[in-house]
Image (cartoon, rainbow, N blue to C red):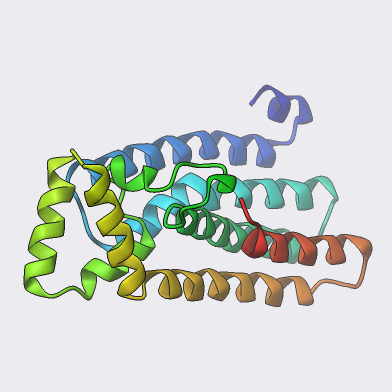
Length: 204
């Protein structure tokens, strides 16, 4: 916020101020959904919008403003950051379902914290009554054995949760690329395309 104030640009100050509020609301919303074991894709998207998409959106919007871009490019840049934020967070959530220590985060960590992210969310929405009852009981208990965590991971994979999450991630990546394609050709445009591709292809 201090850096924003130093710019003496009221628009940038407003963006950074609102960002602090949004990030706090995102953390609170995530805690609420985990505590109440909410299995709802709309609630999940609200969390990642507040926690990640608004952060990248603020960065790209401020970048455009600092470059004295016209209003339409500023608005496109803001939306670009939002799309990249969605793709980044969904990719990050997918990592939690792979047993690979090189990914940079413990496998099943989100599940152990009671966070129902997109792969598991999709699987639960397509589970049979008996499976749903069992897995929701585990999620509400907030105490998982290693075997239960492994079973939830296997369940999410078996039900197509990874494929669904990857498709959603690529949807936002495509929307981001579509926006970038409308920019004039430049080194910056090429860099944004590389960034968008890195976000969905990264290994950790």
